Length: 228
Image (cartoon, rainbow, N blue to C red; front, side):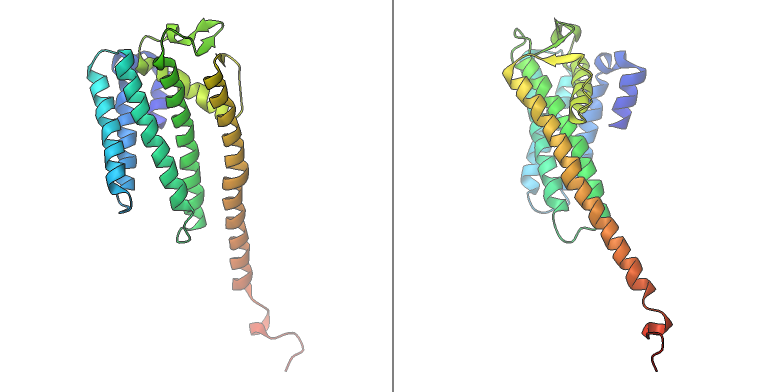
């Protein structure tokens, strides 16, 4: 994800020309796939969803863009990321995970939520190219992107701006479906940090203070002052 963000910032033309976005997201899906198949529960589902998303991405990287292909790629990628988020949240809810692991797992899920909504926005845009679902300065956003690879970075930016409730207002949803997704993402972003992540951090601080108190112990080997 960091590599994709840096490339988007320093060399945005390479995203569409060399299909760097497809390759980086394929690598991200592959890394998540390797990590999740270690869990014997749901290995078949993980392999099917992740494998389908990777194959679709790699095929899209070597073939010209078309609405059907782009819609399939975005849909399969979105399904896998939704499944991955569910796997992470279920994993960090188990008792055998340390608080630090839960915090980092929750942050990973938070980033993937932003990616998931970016894929959903792009999918809705490509589902019916004749209908504008987002506008930029009153111009249909799909007119400013020549391909799915060049469109996805735009929605990645919009998704994280919405997730963090920053809201510059330069990109505007204009259909009921996209407006609903936008306010749902903003709400999820706030509740996720304020409830889940903050709860894990508070639990970690509480356990750390309890451990420090138990190690200090009472003075004089546990005997109270003045005791025999």
